[in-house]
Image (tube, rainbow over all chains, first blue to last red; front, side, top):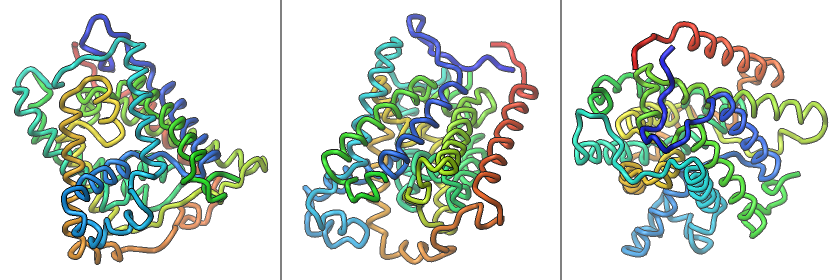
Length: 179
Length: 192
């Protein structure tokens, strides 16, 4: 089997075994179920941040929007547990990366693509993911991970679909990684 | 008994616990190597299998754990918030999500960890997800009808298959183990 990918920097520690990380992530999800009564999430908070940014520019349009309007019914859309979970995720990722000496300011890419081209692909991908996460009411965290663990039919449909979509398009964007 | 069914999810206590859960979430994602778009995207080229290994280990662990706590009478699994099944938007959204995942090299949770690790492509990705969610909202009048396509309320696999949650969770674990074994055995060998 291929050696799993490791950090490119020589000072960085190696990543942990995926099964160990998987059990850790699964136990985190279980704690979330028991303590919060809800699972993990990531895309909801970014959508709420986008809504409040848009609200600062065009408050009337956002408040009358059929999708975003209800988020402003009780004050700021940022007064939501998902926003605090995301802040925690940022800090948790930062601390872990710091301890493992894996912080590196860089555009991550393969040798055959320029940094600007890689950024363009990241932007296109982000547009799709932001849109799709709203359509499916969740992302890899809220649907694929949380919903699948709850054995929800629709979340399993989302999980399968996301891999189908990814593998279908993968050959077209392979150049950004391969040498 | 949890903060959601006590109506305390949106309270200072709920926000504190959510922040702590997020802390652990970000830690494990980073430990797995998911602060790297190169590693994440490699699942789509059969070069690195961590995405599948971590995700299905986590799903199996949480699913079995929840059933075990429920059977032991320690926690009522039915008290956890469950999302409704909407096959139309979940299948189309899933396909579009996969396209974005492989193109951008990130998903929402991992892009946070990538940004915390200094990855500029992760920051670009996050900014674009903000725009993408606003595009969805802007076209809500046209997109709203899709929410009714294949909408069937909260549907679980145990209900659908007429099996107990414990049996379905065991099937998930067995399927994950078969997949992991296949990865270990049949993944192509290649020189670094």
